[in-house]
Image 1 (cartoon, rainbow, N blue to C red):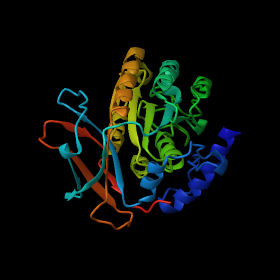
Image 2 (cartoon, rainbow, N blue to C red):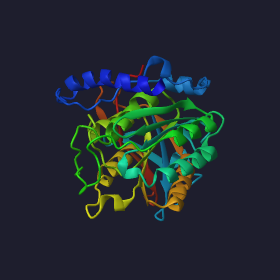
Image 3 (cartoon, helix red, strand yellow):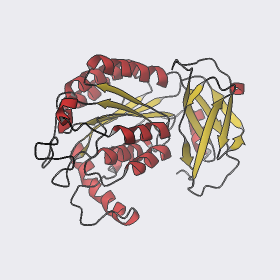
Image 4 (cartoon, helix red, strand yellow):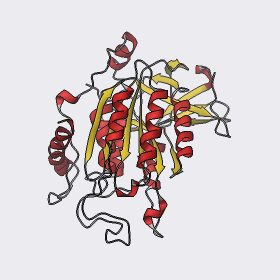
Amino acid sequence: MLLHRFRQFAAVLGLILVSSLGIAAQSQNPPPQPLAQDQQSQAPAEDDNLQTFKAQVNVVNLFFNVKDKHGMLIPNLTKADFEVLEDGKPQTIKYFSAESNQPLTLGIMIDTSASQTRVLDIEQTSCAEFLHSVLRNKDLAFVINFDVDVDLDQDFTNNVHDLTRALNRMQINAGMGGGPPGLGGGPIPTTPRGTLLYDAIYLGANDKLKNEVGRKAMIVFTDGEDQGSRLRIQDAIEAAQKADTICYVILIADRGFYGGFGYSGDYDMKKLAEQTGGRVIEVGNKQEKLRQAFDQIQNELRSQYNIGYTPTNNKLDGSYRKIQVRAKGGEYKVQARQGYYAMAKD
């Protein structure tokens, strides 16, 4: 029933997207959709600090990492070590924390299209291990798989058993007309169906993470190839930015599936990760590399700094504002999202 409702509401959002994004009305591909009301987050009650922070719609909240030139995380920096610029103008830091006690909300997004046939099992195993290791009492996670459809396999929960069960239920769904280059499918499917990567990212950000507070991240397992999405990569990036969500992309693929053609989805995935403050980690089809990637992500999520500031430009006009967070002295690299949309929040 959960998956059925997720698909049903895809048609609703599709009608909206046709007019607002200029998508061809003739398209037959099932569009992305908002979730039913009874599928919304059942998150634990927010503490007073988070409620106060959420109520101040003019506060820009940033979670980020700091690394040295070797990529090692740098702890123990203070508020005085940072400066923030918005559209090139210095901002006054009002809130600062080097703690990571705020709840973490995770979206796990797994590609179950034909190209993942030989790697899905190691994704399922390693992802379950990661969730068991990373989730704490007040943390939440959900699981989505995407192929010719986008399915919500497990809504927000802190129960690792339920999350693991959702992961283990996943199966490859090649749909119709797909397949690797050279086997009749070609790089573009012969039907509107394919791998709805961009639609899935949009739905995970807009429908699941947008209304959550605190630290949020999306981990996307894919080879980066999109086939058939209604939305563009920029729409997915904007949704993640509006949801204040960091996107990590684990590029996992069996290159043999593509023969001599290779795949080129890494460009868009790097764009997604860089603009949201995450990064791309390529693991090929190696389980050990995947486990190492999880270790890196866990360390980064648990070693974040948090800065909040009230922009000098206080207009909530929906415009995009560029952000720069700098560690004074210039010897460290800051891994942070590159901007936000100045929109009033509900």
